Length: 200
Image (cartoon, rainbow, N blue to C red; front, side, top):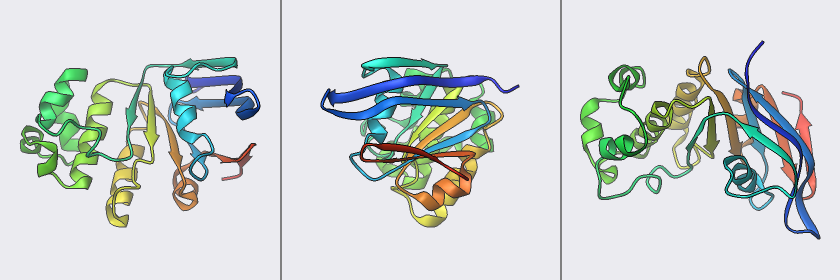
């Protein structure tokens, strides 16, 4: 039986009590599973990640999460512009297994000595994934991980992410329903005041 890496039970949250984003919302993610939260801007997708990471506290309900790391929408803003990629990875993660992982991800080690502006968006997002995986997570939280990339690089990045499902569960938020249908074991659609699980 696959290990549960995220368990949300009966979550209720809103920035005011008169305007709840979530009411009695439950969700489970297991290792090896891809779950995608889909919806337009402003309906609470990013807020859900803040509740999972502990930046926000639910009004009611519980969030139990295993060790996690995050991949952000814009790779250029997820790295400091004046430090090399390897310095920024070293700040948050062990470099144990770096060479093997970089090779698997088709990342030339020389790229890691460069600063973010010297890399393409696709290269930098792969470095972002490398950093996240070196943190040894059991759950990967991916916030619109391909929206800043062109279509070909989007596909490469998603295939790359799904190649690590032997070690993590993957929770994605996106507005792209086609992407969700392509990669997901489970899709949760969020619209104003409504949460609905969709068939895949």
